Length: 422
Image 1 (cartoon, rainbow, N blue to C red):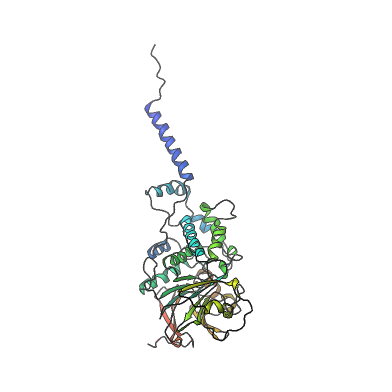
Image 2 (cartoon, rainbow, N blue to C red; image 1 turned 30 degrees about the vertical axis):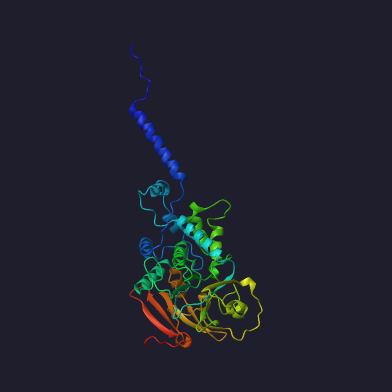
C-alpha cells in the first residue's frame, strides 16, 4: 500500500505565505502614523495646484452665513480606507504621490513655530515694536475668513509684481506682510489658510506678521468652524486627553500672535508710530488700546529691530505722554455693524484724531451673500522719510470676472485720491 504524503503542496504553502504577508502588510499599514509632507504648501505653485483641485465655494449643509456648515464637503473629501492605510504606507516607501493635504504636516509646522516663537517670549497678550528700514513697504491683508483661493490669487499677483518668489519669501528686505487677524472661520478652508500664514511666517521671520483677531481668541474660534474642521479632518493626529484634535496646540499658536504691531515713524522712531491692530475704535472689546499704556516700552532705546512686551506689564490707566503719538492706524472693522460697501480699502472716521484705514480681503460666498463683497483685495502701504508723503494703494479684482487687478492710491494722512499723481 502506497504511503500517503502528509506535507503541504508548494501551491498551498505559497498561498499561506502570501496571505500572511498581506495580513502583516495591513497590520503595519494600520499602525503606521500619517505620512507628513515636510514641504506641504512650501511653494506658491503648490497652492495654485491645490486650489485647482478643490472648489472655491463648496456647497454647505445649511443656509447660515454666520456659522456655515461644511461637514458633507469634508467627509466626501476624506481619504478612503485604502488611501489611509496602504496608500499612506506606500508614501513612506516612495511608491505613490502623497495626498494633497496632510494634517500631520499642519501640526508639525505649527509645533515648530510655537517653539520658536515662545522662545522669543511671543505668548499670551503681547505687543510688538518694529523699527523699519527707510522706505519700508507693508503688504496688508484684511480679514481672510478662510478665503483660500483669493489669498492664493493675491500671492500670485505679488509674485508677478516681483515682491514674492515661488518659495513665499519676500525678495526685498524693506517689504513686510501684515495679516490684520480673523484669518480663520466661516469657510471650508481654515486649516489650509492657516498653513499659508504659517509658511509666510516661517519663510519671512520678523517680516511677516499675523495679528490676533477675535476669531483667534480662545472663547471665539471654537464656535465658528475651525473646531469642527479639526474634528473631521485631523482625527489622525488627535492625542489622548484632547476633546478634539489639536485643541490646545491651536490655541497655543494663537497665543503667539501679537495684539498690536507698532511701527516707528521716521525720523522719530521712538515717538511716532503706525499702528497695525485688529481692534480699534469702539468695534471690539478684546483689548482696550491706548498708546500711553505702552509709553515706557515704545520709548525705550533698543538696537533690536523688533521688540516684544507683555501687555500685563503696562499700566491700565496711564497719563498722557506728550511726546508720544500714533500717526496712522490700519485695522479691521466689524462688517456686519458698518454695512458700508467697499472695494477692499476704506478710510475710517479718525480714531482720536488719528488717520485710520481698514482693509478687507474675504470674497468668500459667505461675504458675497452677507455684505456684497466680491473682490480679491490687498493693500500696500508705502512709507517715506516724510509721513506727509506716505501712500496706501489698493490692489483689487472682481472675483466674478477675474479680469485683472485694478489699483487705487490714496495719501495716508489726508485720504486724498492720488492714483494718477506721479
